[in-house]
Image 1 (cartoon, rainbow over the protein chains, first blue to last red):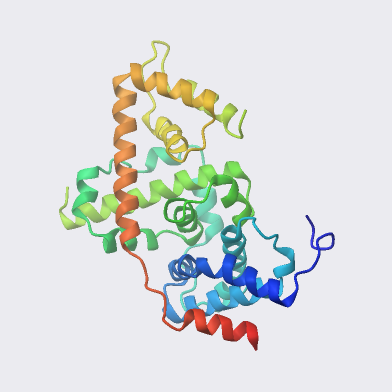
Image 2 (image 1 turned 120 degrees about the vertical axis):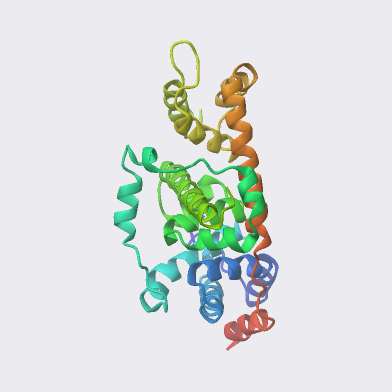
Length: 192
Length: 97
């Protein structure tokens, strides 16, 4: 239903929607923001900015639909359009280069995916989180959305504005990249 | 028929030789990921499950991927940033100002 065809919320309804549908996701939103920015203050700003936008555009949100996906989409757009430009940690990797490299047909032949469960069991959450943080943001994002937040491919496609087929392939590449990082790390630490 | 029915059919075929042996583990791991993400349709799932029951190599690879995924997700979930105490209050203040 479009914003035009739906009745606008009253001030009381706005507060109700905001409190009951948006605020329960603040924890996930903050963690997502932190994993994008790596900075507590920046993550806080990004979440505040997202909620402010969500409130401003609350009439385009239909009550009872997927509020979490709607909020994540706003946060992701804020991060890309505004935040990434002024980020304290500018992207060190050209995303387009990485995406085209990882989408080439023979790339999987070069990726080491012989990571074993026993190796991962030796690692602590911080080490695995560090490996996740070391992969390019667009690949990191799909892992966060899928494996930490439990979004479906369809929801991720809407949040990220990409085709559902790209969600599947990007997620596969991203998981391989994470495994590659963990394999290298395990070798360095002598876990293998 | 879901978004990935055709992709599944094509990719699954490429994983096996004429004798039905698993020959492309990397491609098969893509199939496993689709299954573990609960994105495969019923028909694809039936084909997949039949293979898992009848092919030891496929079954082994599936178990390996499944356990690795569970272990990684469990460890990743442990690393959670505590939200600042004043965040909810700051949000409410910003929308009321």
